[in-house]
Image (tube, rainbow, N blue to C red):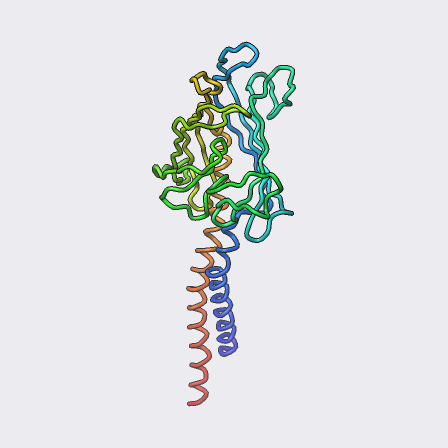
Length: 296
């Protein structure tokens, strides 16, 4: 019986070591990848000074924005995920929905856009070429998230108004609702750009992004954006941030995802290697000690 138990321990130890090796060598590449079933809605709110084309006056308004990002599984593959993103900014008055038509009788639509882009599932860097439909804008740098295991360094971050990447500078480390995040700062200072379709003007932006370093997801974001005509007349002066509920949801999701990654990539290997080693030692002792007694 002692010998049988020893062989059982040897088998268990070998199994645990194999599990630990798998979790160490193979699992990180599988769990640290953007899911192909991503379907997220992000809500922001704030204020805006906006030119009213009808009156020629700049109006101060409460606004809200909704960004919906969905993965296109048919265009995606093991290495690259393709996203379809729609963003709608509306005047926040009354019971306004997330988005309204351009011919909304109350004139509550500020802007609406749809974009298609592709990113590497691990590095989050933009990918172009065959993954994009005809006519889609090619991009560079990070777009909708940071890489897994984000670092305290500067990254290139895509700016859709400029149509070029800009520096996202590491600023500091901050804790949001118990989650450690890396804070990055993006500044665009009075750059010439197409501020409205077909209209050239001056564009500035001051944006902060709080990133979960484990998953690379954006936890919070604040932005101040200014678009003017070349003579300085204001078209849009926007101050926007994630809502408190959105930040809370993002923190909870990041904690859940981080716990799963921690379990698979750290806890399982630790338990596997330690438990496997102990089981192998105990099993070897029982088997070979028994053999020595039989020989004697």
